[in-house]
Image (tube, rainbow, N blue to C red):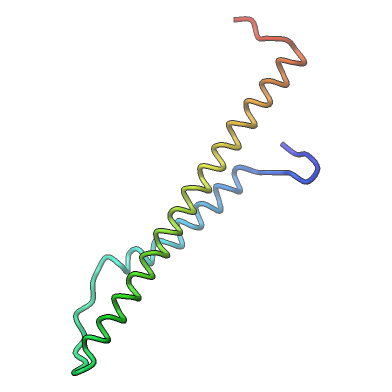
Length: 100
């Protein structure tokens, strides 16, 4: 559907969602395996705390990216549904109700 200033291609919206999912996959895979505790002498606790903070940040990034992908897919589905309903309503207005 195209109107001045508003044009959505649900297939392109799905492409965006797929790219978001693909971007999250390598990070999620890396998060699956915890590294060995580093041996850093007196700084070990600080290094572990830093790595834990980094893992937490990456986890948030992966969750956020997955949430964005899901929301993007939901938006595409909603657009398809709304566009289909609008087309059916317009057709019924122009051609009358479908006998059934």
